Image (cartoon, rainbow over all chains, first blue to last red):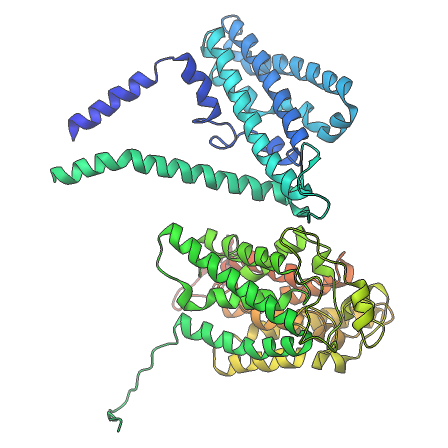
Length: 229
Length: 351
């Protein structure tokens, strides 16, 4: 058994070596900001009542995350430790302002539908969290990949919620009617409680998949231990 | 011939098991189901069968995937299904009823860990979900005692799954003996200030949810359980007392605006909720004082929601709120342990 565990340890060490593909994929699946880390719950619950809103929110967050992570990584050796959070907020707020004006220029309807949540990207804990936990300690390339992975993971999670809520709550996907006029809309799904129900259901699914995977990964070891005993 | 064993006292009886109590609750609900059938015909039968089957299938499905032992034998899923059907409008589309049954067991009971661990009454969780999801269907009422009720369904009952239910306005106008406005006595009282005779409410020939119409029958079925010692009589008594006192206070204040307290007691789902749902052993407090507080709170909230809320019926939300408050009530009303000089409740000394 002891040799087994030490082998597992060395494997973990090997995996934690910086690997660009791993950095990118980590945010999409293994450390998904919504389904695994449960970060940024405010926009996740509030603006996922339709696919368009979810997509716009996801892309806006992705843009801000990518730009801020890049800039923070570039400036990581110049920002004094004592004022780093304030500096990150200034950097993030700059890009949020850009996004705010861009969305307002592209579509005023979308801007009104998203409401205060665009401005609130500035306090989204995913973005500040990645700046503090990753970008400030890594090189620019790695920080960019991390931002892309996390941003895409966040967007996909928003789409998962927005898709289910719009299909059930309105019978449409991206505004296109799926089931015809006779579909009975589940009005609870586009209301705030629906956000909690759908998020809970997705978390259930992800945790169930994770548990199954862990059990499968564990079972050969267990069998080995049993035969040794 | 059966052999009889003669023994001296004490003759020890085992306490009734969960399954025994639950089975007796099902027996107590049967007359109400039969009356619902007499009153609303085929649609009510279909509704009761569909919700019960939905609850049973959901229960066994969750038992299978979680690997726990079979819990269908304790009849609690059957009770949830029957109670759920009794709280729904008789013409409620069957596919929505199945959704309600699934949510009741899945969200209301199994996700918390099964019977004994559920915070809220499962049947009411299912009903609250469909109330939020399908607000129109759940407030569409049909007249009772129509001529052809045993040969044809209410048009909205057999709605194709996931489709919008058929409108029943025209059907209502055709089948109703008197002019039927599509409202329950409570809605008539609240929105149009039309009183309904308390006598009619007692015998239940009015419109309403499938099993809530006859206050007298529900009272008798509840009394059966109380006399079998399978229902804590203090909970229904406290709920009804709370509702009566609250309504009496408002009625004395302005009798033109607020209806008679007796009307409030016998209308809507108050009697069914007080007898069979508030008294659910899992969601109610265990301390003697706590039980009274719990019941009075539910009665008070019901009347407040009925009089001042957007809906005309409030017993469902009142019981759910009561369930949520029940652990807190238990904590605040712990009896003094014999021989202990001082106890602390919420950091305050009490003697």
